[in-house]
Length: 215
Image (cartoon, rainbow, N blue to C red; front, top):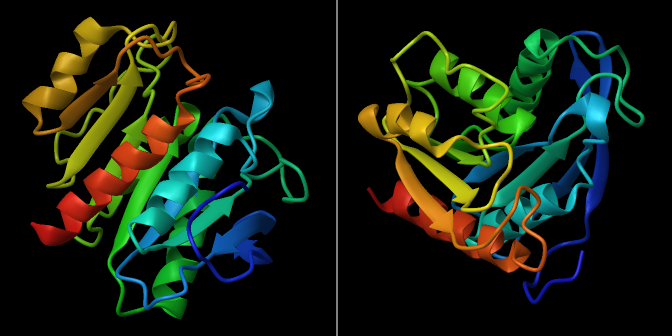
């Protein structure tokens, strides 16, 4: 990944998951990290992987904010074992990755970050862990394809990033997130995959992480 951030060498890991091993990429800043960020990729059936450029720039944002960044491939993607499970088993995969972070870095707060389908999976997990996590960040939450979770017990800190030209986001439905305390940042002119604007994903991610950690 092209970067101007000094980091330790990237590690490729396998994490025990509920339906087999999960392939993961793990990155660390050179200095003592202040938090850990779990990054979740877009839809497995539409080419989504942990190598997705938006996800990679989410991880860069975490590193920029001096945090650990863990990216996983959901079940059935790349070298991860198992099969696609309509988002249900993927929540379990994300929780397994969260548990790995918690077990290996018990003193660090954890933030859940997701892009598109990964944002939807991440919000379900964030609601389950609302009293444990430091916050939740969504990029391009796909309101054209998914209903919001029934629960309104969201994490106390939640933020949403979306491009104004995103074909998968109905912005009238984003009012629900605002009503539940979510903060929204729009990137003018950006479509779903933020072409030529990925640096904005990185910078806004870093800004929200810093805000979450300082509140």
